[in-house]
Amino acid sequence: MMRKIIGVGIGVCLLIALTMLGQLFEQVNANEVVVIQSVSGQLTINATPGIKWQGFGKVTSYAKRGIYEFDTKVRFNDGAHAQMKGSIQYEVPLNDVQVKDLHTRFGSQEAVQTQLVQTVVDKSVYMTGPLMSSKESYAERRNDLIWFVENQVEDGVYKTTQREVHEADPVTGQDKWVTRVELVKGKDGLPERQESGVLRGFGIKTFNFSLKSLDYDEAVEKQITAQQQATMDVQTAMAESKKAEQRALTAEKEGQATAAKARWEQESIKAKAVVQAQQEKEVAVLAANRQLEVAQLGTQEAEQYRLAVLARAEADSTYKKKVMDADGALKDKLASWQAVNALYAAALGAHQGPLVPSVVLGGGSGTPGQQSSVNDLMSLLMAKTARDVGLDLSMRGKQ
Image (cartoon, rainbow, N blue to C red):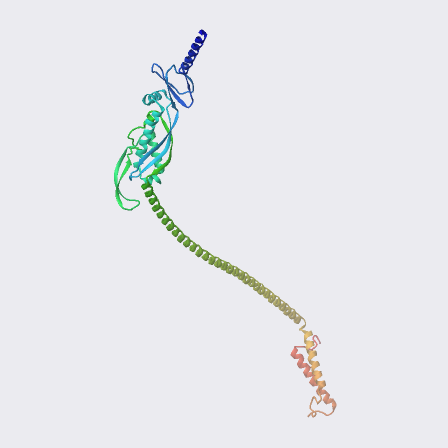
């Protein structure tokens, strides 16, 4: 029995020791910051992983990185509402002083997210809505909407002012007065802030702001749809007008191109004709020049022929003159004299009748007288011929 009692006692002591051992040390993970509040109330910040001394103190763990998913209502400057859904990630500080300040003020991860991160994000979303209309947030200024929210979460909400403006309703087209919220900018051109960034003051860094959806009220959705349809109709009309203008321009350009093509075709024909005419002219000039050269050569040849003929004639004349000067053209004269006398003789021989009168007065009768008359006639004829040809039958040099 005594042994059983001793065994139970030892077991109880071991259990108590093990329980107390769990409060003596704390395992710190790499993705967390652990604040240990000792029995005396001293805070110890543990941002590095490993086994840390707890000493029966209170342990509070903060995730180094957290994510806040929000679903916040936003009101735009045209009175429309929408439900903005998204998320933003944040990191707690690792500096001992900032962690102690954060822990002292909020005391837990949940309180930091709900009382600090959520409040700042919701406020930034609310203050961004009046900076634009629902239509602008839906379309052309969607990026501005995201940037305004993220920038105000990091650096504090903007300082704004209100201004009444008179403008046409985008759906009805009726003029109306609307309130426009505008940013107040400093001398440097940057927006002024109502307050400095709260999260930044605690050393909390935000990043990766993501907008998942922006759900508008049913009336706003219809209004936006109507505006979009009107805008699309206008854009379609403008597009059709642009198409018509483009078609007109295309037709004009095509007409100009056709005219230019026709003009250049005519110019090409003209150029070809000019070239052909030029070629024909050059050929004609070449032919004329050739004919001129041929004519000039012919003239030169004729001139040379004339000069040759004249030279031969002059040579012949000179020769004949010299021959005549030498013998008086005796050979020619004799040939002429012989030919003429031969003709005389032939003519007399062929004569049938008497050559002289049959009765001669003053002379004797008989044959001798007749023969003498014939001889005299022949002598006269030969003398006449000799005189005509210039033949001197006298014996030159005769003593």
